[in-house]
Image (spheres, rainbow, N blue to C red):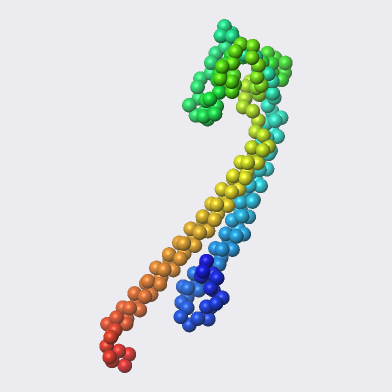
Length: 202
């Protein structure tokens, strides 16, 4: 950033090298991109993600229906579902219990459902969500959670953009440094044999 700030100050300095000017302009360009392009990419990414998630929220609320499940005794004969090894930790903490419930079409269902209660007793009731056929499903995504995911996506996109800008700047600076060293070696190869001789340049 010091190179960008000093660009105007030493733009006519006779000791200025071409690579110095290129590095200064590169730093100024990177600063502009970090201040404007990265936040813009983050805002666009967050907005698009939020629009997509909010659409999913509306769709899930249309397709999923709340109902009340009543815990049955062990004699109900309901079969326990197979344990999903890829289930989230929160889902694994929920207890599976035999229960009966009524679907949105009025049909009665019996089966194993999950509940946050660790030791539910027969006769206890709790809320579950079902699809149009009365099959248990996960609760629909709510608006606040969708917005939080969109914010995280926007921040992530902004940070990735900033990282790419800074990474690109460092790569170009490294190439400029390599060019400086190459030119210095070439100049030294020409002047080296005559260095220190009294008749050098004579």
